[in-house]
Picture (tube, rainbow, N blue to C red):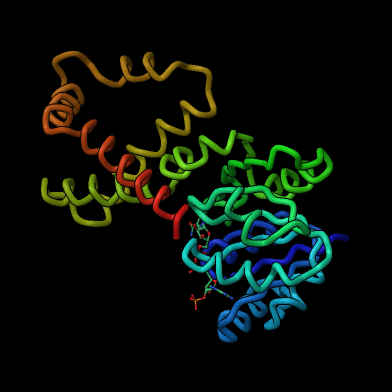
Length: 263
Ligand SMILES: NC(=O)c1ccc[n+]([C@@H]2O[C@H](COP(=O)([O-])OP(=O)(O)OC[C@H]3O[C@@H](n4cnc5c(N)ncnc54)[C@H](OP(=O)(O)O)[C@@H]3O)[C@@H](O)[C@H]2O)c1
């Protein structure tokens, strides 16, 4: 049984622990965080081992998950770097490149990056992974297998991981849901019905496309009758700058990810 050590016991660690527990994973799970209250809570909710001492936590690790915010990575790794044994580590920190991680932590650490989402809590998420060029196959498999316990895993080159991060956020769905439901309420629906109708409108068709074998174009053609209501809605949204708004959002996310590299 291998030991997975999480450095940082915040939101994404909590979601991953839930996904790992759901899958009945046989890993031993250890969490280090600087907040004793968070450690107590994680221990109670997921039955994990908690370790308030950073070096003692890192020393137990067969696989180390760096799950602190990008602005905390430097401080954390300078301390972990003092661990002398070789370690396989995966950073979840958005925008912080492998070469920066290697430089901060020094030679004993072998690195990968991963980008999961809180949806991994339900066991049906997606995670992108990028590996250091020289990372041995056996290490790649260990990283892949951990994330595969709670969803699909795709390997992408590190040069694409910021674009993936910006695109693959469940916040897109929640944002679209909130915006559509708000407009539906303005059109006269009560909040409960507005949310129900909006959630089905956004989720059902997309899941059917993802799990079926129809092209997006054919499904759009089926759903949008020329001259009909859906056509009027889509045309008005496009004219109001829907595509431009999404492109500008993605560009802002990319700028933020690139800024994280220098934090
Ligand atoms: N949340 C997501 O959906 C998501 C998805 C994919 C990747 N990520 C990445 O995962 C990382 C964590 O995100 P998060 O949302 O889980 O953040 P978070 O909720 O803020 O959790 C980070 C935890 O690490 C603790 N911490 C920070 N520096 C520490 C240190 N030096 N020693 C010990 N503990 C320390 C924080 O304590 P304090 O509160 O005291 O700072 C906090 O409890 C980020 O780099 C993010 O880019 C997040």
